[in-house]
Structures are given as structure tokens and as C-alpha cells.
Length: 515
Ligand code: ADP
Ligand code: ZN
Image (cartoon, rainbow, N blue to C red; front, side, top):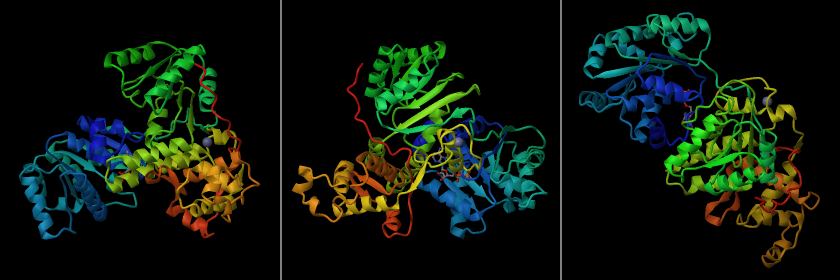
């Protein structure tokens, strides 16, 4: 049910690291203290549970602008939310009181100063408040920079209402934590969520698709006897890979949403019990799986977003012992994921946000230094190079690709932003195919400007350009490549582009399936 709300109200497919557990605890009515980095997604941790329970959740927050923002976006998502702040017009305040008295409000944002008025607590009691959430809870610490005396009244509020309280902060030091516990919870220990996002025992690796089946088979074969999951983008692929693994003597079983419930339960049971079984699965697999010794997770295709990626690899190595991951990606994946977003039914802003989350994952795929650092930075945590990812193991050679990237952009523009990668590479390398001569593309000034660069290198360059969102396949032009706003400063010669050389290698054709 939390998962359904996450999808329906917020449009997210997965929880971010830590969110799921916190949501569960808050929804269960526990007192909670959660320490999450800024940008980690804490608001969802109290907003979502507020929708799961009866009555109103009061949110104490020190920042009026932030409250107004949140109320606006909640309302846009169809959630009954309101704020009582000094910035309100009289009409706004009247509306909030009306919604409170007729019991329709789910979330009430309030600045701590409000608590100084003797009328506030009785008003909240009458309104049927069933939980309290406190944002920026470190403001209760008298020794911190952000001390707000009115935060001391939050403890009184909790006592007066006798409802559970969830406190959130990004400040992790032990003293501040102790002070929060003393002042907001009267010293009764709340459930504390402090675990950082990092899962240091999981080795991170990405590879561009070169010979994808071979890459996956090799990865699995090298880990024979260990339990692993291979995530695939399609049901059909779960089945062909399953057959290929079994033919190679690696015990495997497929799992996807198209199977009967009973059959799926059977696979889950086998995976739980048997050692060394490989499950080839769609994302339908994993929710109910609680197996601590999954030694590896591979993605045969690019996941949907950085959140999904993290959630899926996070199923490996729950026991803390070393675990390995491999994620394959290629231009077709990027095209597929972009098309899924573009052709979805979501409103325009949500599509843009979905493209943004896909970009975040592609940025990780095309990272030029420590992947974990990159991943954690996305979730708001700073860290040192990890020493446990493919890029720490083998730092890639970088090169200034500004020149070739501008050549490719210009070839795309000159051909009317209408063609796919193959055609653009033919233009760049001066390959006079029928399609090229029919369209007169052999007479373009860009024809053959990139002759010196082998085709395989051009493929790697274009893939990295897709990954940097310099170019996108246009669903309205059969996936023809078009240039994004990100590319404009590059075209104008204002922004240089650095790419990885190590991945620039000749692409081999996918061999005929031998199952
Ligand atoms: P903070 O922890 O700083 O309060 P927010 O709650 O404002 O962070 O969330 C930061 C950003 O992360 C927001 O843009 C939000 O939409 C996004 N976000 C939060 N949870 C998820 C999720 N499960 N999947 C994708 N994006 C998320
Ligand atoms: Zn690293």
C-alpha cells in the first residue's frame, strides 16, 4: 500500500535508500528520529504515512518558503494540505481552518512560533491531530547554530496531544541527537534511523553493451554456485537467459509478472531455500525477497532510474559480506527508457522529472571517477573514493572530446535532426551508403569530417553523448536523434566535453543465440 501511494501520488517507482523503512515505522505509529542528508527525500517519510492514517498530521517546519512550496506541490498531487504561517492571506488562513474543522485536511504545516499562542494546542486537539512531524529537528538544540527557542514548545505539544512524533534532521552528531531525544521525546528512546545510504560491501560496476549475452553469461559463470539475480527489461529476455544459463549448466529459473501467482511463489521459495540458484527476472521480483546472502545482482538492461538501480542492487549482500553487481547499458536501452517516459500518460512536469532521474542514472553509467562517490552525492552524501567500484579498480583514461562531439552535433543538425546513430556515423566517416547518396548527405560539409576516427569509437562517443543528455532520440521522429539544450553551449564552443577513452572500442555484433 505505501508502494501504491508512492506511485499514484508522487509518481515514483521506488523508495530511496532508507525511505521505505522510515515510512513503515512512522506509519506504524512509532516515535522516530531519522537522520537523512539534505536532498535525501525526508519530506516523503512523513507525508506518505500521513495519507495512510486517519486525522491530521501536523508538520513543524522553520522555513515559510519551504512550507509554501511543499503545500503547493502536495495540492497539485491532490493531497489536502495547508499551512498556517505569517505569510498567509486572511483568505488562506480561513480556508485552512475550514478544512480543519470539517475534517478534510491531511497535512497541516505550521511554524514553531504558532505554538507560543495559547489557542494553538486546543485548536489542534479539536482538529483531531493524530501525529506530529518535525522538520529540521536540530533547531531544538541550544548549542547549535540554528537554535529556535520555539522548538522547545514542540515537546509540550507532543505531551499535550499524546500522539507519535517523527523528527527529521540532516545533522548527525551524537550530541545533537541526544538533545533532540531529551527535548522532543522526553528522553524516551525513539526508533533512530541513522544508517547512511552507503552499502560499502557491494562492488559497483557498469559496462556498455558490447556482446551483452556473453557479458552476462561470463559474469554468471564466474560466480557459479552463488545466488544471484539478473534483472531484464522484458519478460521474453528473462526466459531466453534462463534457458541459456541452464544450457551452460548454471541452475536458473525465470520470474516475471506474467506468471501465475502460484508459480511465482514457487520460484521465490526455491530462491530462498536453494544455494546457487540464479533468478532471471523483471523488476516484479524482489519486493518480498528477504534473502541475506544474495551474492550478486546483474542488470542485463539499464534500470529505469537511479532510485530503481539502487533498490535493485541493494538486494545483494544484506549479510554485509562482499557482493558484486554489474549493470549493462547501451543506446537501445537509453532509447527504450526515453520512449517509455515520453509515451507515458504522466503530465509534462512529471515527464521532465522522469527524464531527470534517468539522466542521473546515465550520468552514473558514464561517470569518469569513483561510482560510489557519484551515487552517494546524488543522495546527498559526500564521501571519499571507495576503492570498491570498477572505476576505482581501473581509473579510466579521459580525453578532450570537444572536437568530435561538435562534429557529431553538427552532422545531426545538418541532416535535419531526423536520423539514428548509424546514419550519423556514416555521415561522419564518409560512408556513401545508398541512403546517404539518395538524400544527398554526401554533399554536406560534415560528410567525412570524422574519417580519422573508427566507427567503433564514434559509437562510444555517441553513446556517451546520449548519456550526457547532449542528444536524445525523438519519439516523434522514429527515434531520430535531436539536440538538447545541454548541447547548445558545446556547439557554441563555450563548454568543453571530456569523455572516457577506455570504453571506446570496436563494437562486435551480437552472436546468434546459442541456447
Ligand atoms: P530533503 O531530505 O532535503 O527534505 P526532499 O524531501 O525535498 O529532501 O526531497 C529531495 C528530492 O528528492 C525531491 O525533489 C523529491 O521529489 C525527490 N525524491 C524524494 N523521494 C524520492 C523517490 N523515492 N524517488 C525519486 N525522487 C524522490
Ligand atoms: Zn569507487
